[in-house]
Image (cartoon, rainbow, N blue to C red):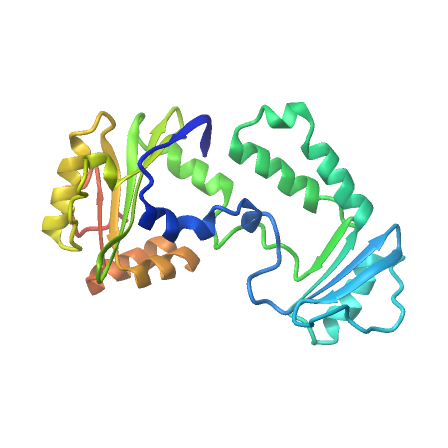
Length: 268
């Protein structure tokens, strides 16, 4: 949930570098995954234009393909077991998505609303883009409705803070200020002044960070400190709350909310 007029402030180089892989918003729309072995069949109204194997250096050498029934073709190719995912894409459909996504009324939407609309433009045509297995409808088990529900549970205004603490200190120090149910400002631990405070993955470090956040104009609501490995596991976990609880028990994460006094306790 991002406000149309959001601001980015104090994004230090280390945090920005470690968050850079999430900046590509197509990650959340596309079905193909990094390092996945996929087959892409591009056609123009059932006339095959190109067939590409993602692990091949050039075009894929396949017998003549019948694209008159895209879903049947995709199922036939996927059933061969040679590819982890098969894409059968109509060039005309992509052109229509691009054209519709440039309409002024869509550009007036918030960022998350805009990409949700693009997602539906791309995937709601059952013949335009056929993909097996299909797009799961989430990104690492995050959904827009789930994020929206979480944000709506927070005080207004408030801040959400993530600290990923590695062997050499803070790898990600990110603060998101919320207002009216959306992110209004993204900043980093540089907001506390330079040099940045050395936050440790300890109860004392969490206390220190909470005090610094409480001195800002926007009060803290949720703060999570964790190791890089825990952060990576949390990103992909289906049950993120359970993963965080396990990490707290293992000593690789600390969690505090505005209504919980004990820093190492995760609310149920």
